[in-house]
Amino acid sequence: MKTEVSTAANFISRLLKTTGLLSEEQLHHFSYSLEKSLGEHYQHHWFPHAPCRGSAYRCIRINENHKMDPVIGEAAGTIGLTREQLFTLLPSELTMWVDPYEVSYRIGEDGSICVLYESEPSSSSTQPETASIQSQEDSNNRTISGSCKGELRVGMGRSKTPKSFTTIRISSS
Image 1 (cartoon, rainbow, N blue to C red):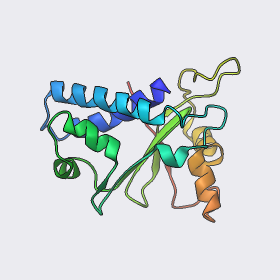
Image 2: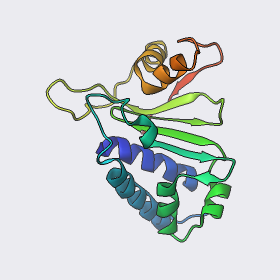
Image 3: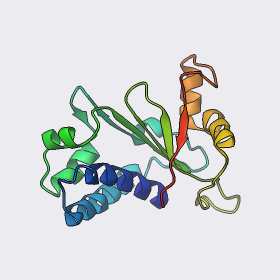
Image 4: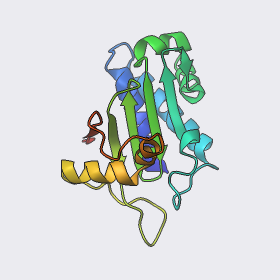
């Protein structure tokens, strides 16, 4: 869970960094606070043997109706940011899924789902192995058919490979 939570916290911190309005110290403190809060929040809702179980609980949402995920709001408060300030600094529509073995996000309601981190379950433990790097075609197929988001799209009556859907791989180096 640590890798997935860290990936999510670092991504949101990088979004804040792009504004140029926060110091490195503030960003570091925000990231640390968010990572700690998410870890505590997900503690009893993390199921490596059934990664989609609890996915809705672990979903982080910000939307244009001025709804901010409370965990992000609390972390922002530790560096003196109000929820209103956060709405001006972060995308108006952001959904992030933090699941065992995968962290992904979507900006906008109809945006593409981008995978930030993905790994395979280890047969000997429940800890993820290093993130796998695959060709774009292979990773698209696996993300669509093997992830919680793929199951969600199919459950909503969408085909497994909709023409308007694109999965984008983001590597963090």
